[in-house]
Length: 284
Image 1 (cartoon, rainbow, N blue to C red):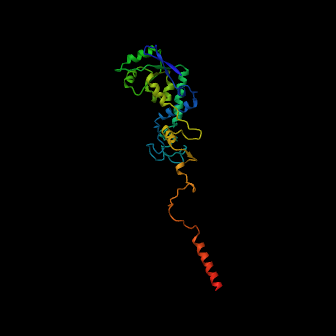
Image 2: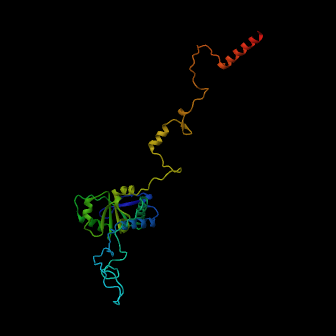
Image 3: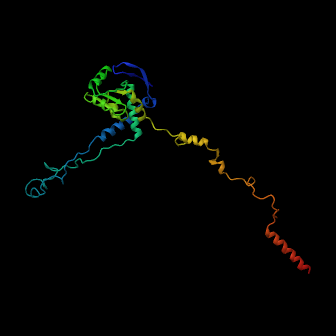
């Protein structure tokens, strides 16, 4: 996907920028956007609300009047929740509203928000704004030349303090680093002005994680693959150098000049000598 780059004067610069389809051209996921926006809004809540209960109200614990004989309903002390100035029943207490969303869902939500902006043609790539000093007139002329009005989000390459100070006095204009803009910032803006130099930073921040291979393991790095190619051939996971040496191929260390050694076991020789002695005794 390619988009034309516009100048400060609102005209085309004569060049185009390449946008990754895996980030800007996906099918938007509304549920992921809802999860991330709900998490952002919930995390903004302080959760410091508190009301005094019966035990915290500063009033007397004396019984207001006797139990019987007055004609009124029985009553206890003035801290009762039924009376004016008494404690609150089950009042709010300080607690957190934090909702956690995993990183992949946040990335999917931001990619979906950008996909909606591209579909509505409210995402425009402009040339880099290199301002020497903060000047609000420069940003005002830029917005007017490009026909931008209302809530506008300017995405820069990293934190640009000069650009931020130049646009902070213009109502509805917000300047953020491209890799720090949340889903709520992207959805809430009527127009998004993306600087040409911030396209790569935004792409790297929203790039999906590397998928695993068919066998469930991640692909080995390039260094490991080159090392495996340089190693000797293996069979069944065992290198040839580790295989046992067959007996017939085992090297011999005997001296060829040495005399022949009888192969008859010593026990057999002793048994033959015993048989000859028994025959001699019988003849005698």
